[in-house]
Amino acid sequence: MATEQSVDLVDDETVGLFTKAVLLAALTAGLAQLSIPIGPVVFSLQPFGMFFAGLLLGPLWGGVALLLYLLVGIAGAPVFSNGTAGIGYVIAGRTGGFLVGFLVGAVVAGAIAHRSIAPKPVADLSVPVQVVALTAAVAVVYAIGIPWMAVVTGLPFARAAAVMAPYIPLDLLKLGIAIAIVQGGYLAGR
Image (cartoon, rainbow, N blue to C red):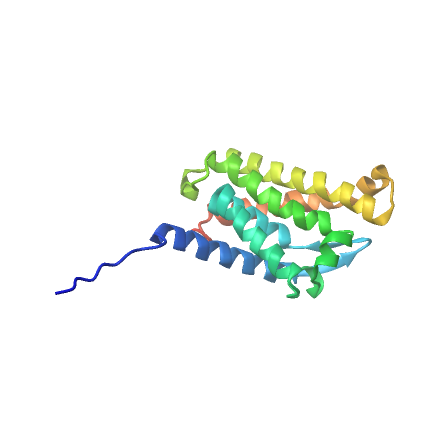
């Protein structure tokens, strides 16, 4: 008489985190479509995807979420701001560095907020820790995006930084809104 054995290849927690990463990648793609071209760059709601990925999923799975978003866009799906896509848009586009910065920013935000690879419940993250984590993420995005834009456009670094300076207060406003949404429990199911 044969007995059947079941083997779980992936545990339920990993499946749940991967599912959340996919959902946050899709949310980021949707938020990217809410964008307005202003000058040489686009004002969009994409940073919310990075913020939520880092705070809700931690550094590993938050990074996976933004990596999925980037890979889908590089593969040609129109998920970047204003329905753009492609590897050329990332590598040679003036905002490509900001897209890469979102990936690194999600990892940085998650690492600071959770201080481990495994995500903690959002309720365990204090508001000051969230503020520091997301502020560091914004700094990382600009630290990668501005030099990238300078190289791609041929602008001097100081000029590229001056072009981006007006966007910093807007991103800090988005940061505050993201924390309010997370604290309100709207994404964590509280």
